[in-house]
Amino acid sequence: MNALPDGGEGPSSLAHTFSPEEVDMDLTMCGLLPARAEEIARLYREYGTWNQVKDVWFDERRGNRSTKGSSRKIYRILSSRFKNAPPSLPNPSDLPAALDACTSARDKAQVLYPYLVADDALVRYAVHEYVQRLSADGPGALDFSDETLTTVLNEFEYADGTAFDYADSTTERWCRGFRSVMREIGVLEGRQAVVGTPPSLGDIPLLVATGYSFEASEDAWFESPIGLQYLFQPTARWEELYDRVVETEAWEFVELHGSLQLRPTDEPYSWITSEGTR
Image (cartoon, rainbow, N blue to C red):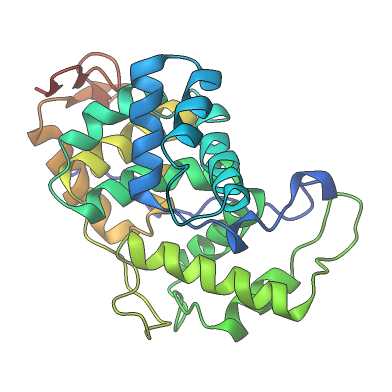
């Protein structure tokens, strides 16, 4: 296949975008937590309303070790990722079927990861900055040490021009939380590693990342597939990944305006069914 455009740039920086009210340090309290996020998605699929999901969530945890306050924080943060999910991602009620089709815990983490990125402004900013570094092929592009992450955060500015300003201890906890997410999705290997590499993608995370890229920016997605970039997939891998997604039969190459383009054979997430995937 020879359909890739020339070049391939990372997404633009999100500096000067967010108001102080949009930015929080929720990552210090709750990381990706794939197992708990999956449970919430299953409850939502079963009950259909967030009020019922919340009631069941707390009822089932009365005898657990986690305190009520801790459980409340976790529920608030995880459910927020689903409640605020953009339409470019699979509907949370469809997530259980997609997760059932995953072949590993890492695949599930990679499917849930874009919901975190979409919901958490500070995480999204940091991911954008690292994608920019990776696209520039800079040395140590995926260095997630405290020093490098803090440098990235210190370059953040709010929409009103004020700078990132949190206590050092809070920033350190945030950095640990960010690294834990990178371990979950396979960028970092081992608990001590701070420098990562682009992770391999299973078929289901690849389908979600491709659908997200297409839906988030239909006109320009092929030249800048945001779902693949958020998973730190370098330009050199895109051709292979596009070929793989076509092999699933959920996507196909079509000729448009004299060039080969990748398009879903139906809707981007029509491969998700109540029984799993086709």
